[in-house]
Image (cartoon, rainbow, N blue to C red; front, side, top):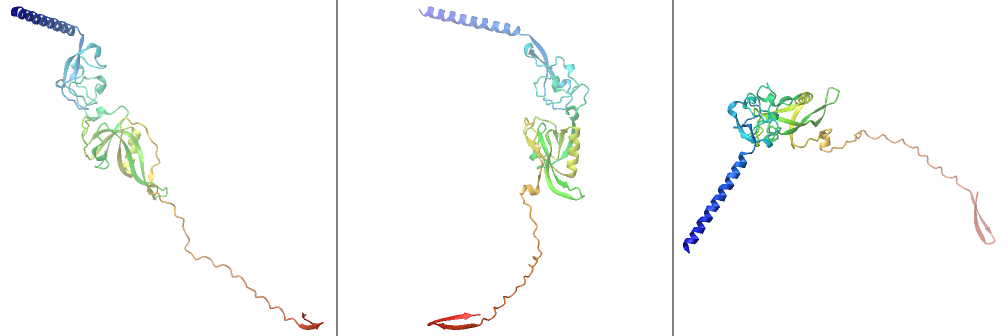
Length: 278
């Protein structure tokens, strides 16, 4: 009886092992049948503006049905190209993440066509306590004296002169992967040529401040700025004359003349007494 049970358990184990082997063989054969292509990926973290060389690249098998658009299959096609965004290790190299062929490395490679890069001095307050990092967007506010038009300085005003400006770099760093605030002495902004002229004039006539804004908020708000009197809600004061009021013209008072004395005669008639005056 015991032998029969042992034989049954042995047969069951053999059948289970055979089934597992068949399943594994089928799984491997199915995986081997999936079509794949070679895709160039980064083997190290690549910072924006860096020139790519062979030591930064490798190729991996990528399922043919999910190869991303713009991917490269040959590493030679990527060598000496410049990254215009930061690339992480293991990330596929795509055409849209590279600067045009022939672009030299550095910050100039990441400036959008038609744009300019301009650097302004900042401090821990103007630079939004170091939170204005590469890849963030800011507004630029200038505080200056208005021109009265008579060669004299007018009221002091704060006015937003530029909106939704991209921060390209802080100091000499252009990496967008770091999220820690950095207090620096200069910030480089990406501007159109017209906005570059506005910023150059604004920093020469007053003091600048950066206002950090949400990255997805692209709405622009037109403001007239605010002056000191508006800030403190000062009311216009009506001037009051300090001269003594003019004296009212004197009126001539004419005394009433007394009525002339009347002549009276006392008359007694029929025992009735009366007084008649003339």
